Amino acid sequence: MTSKIVYEGALRTTATHLRSGSVIETDAPTDNNGKGERFSPTDLVATALGSCMMTIMGIVARQRQLPLENTRISIEKVMGTDPRRITEVKVKIDFPPDLDLSPEERTRLEQAALNCPVAKSIHPDIRQSVVFNWHPAEEATVHE
Image 1: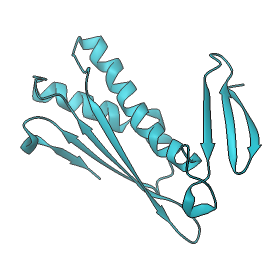
Image 2: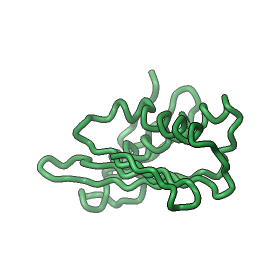
Image 3: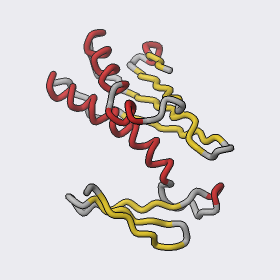
């Protein structure tokens, strides 16, 4: 087993990772009868995509001794209605301005991110829009 989830009431859950004991609380969003005081379950799906992308790029970077520290990812989740579901996850990856990588290294990192396990697990109807902001900013790569 990976985790256990307990319903705490008031549309809140507590999920415990069994191996580490790490805890995540979720709350229903304000637009769906909740308080919006924690990540919603759909927030976690969108956030998992960015976290997975960064982790897989980190593996590639470690193997190639590339410094990815201070790389930042911003996530925007877009919800649809009828049925209520995630329709798009927008991912913006900002690399540090002092990161000097060859075009081949950049491509390798982009492909690692785009092919991370979460990206490949999300239903194909959910659009994944990914922007890789290499510096200077005019060097951005967009994948949709």
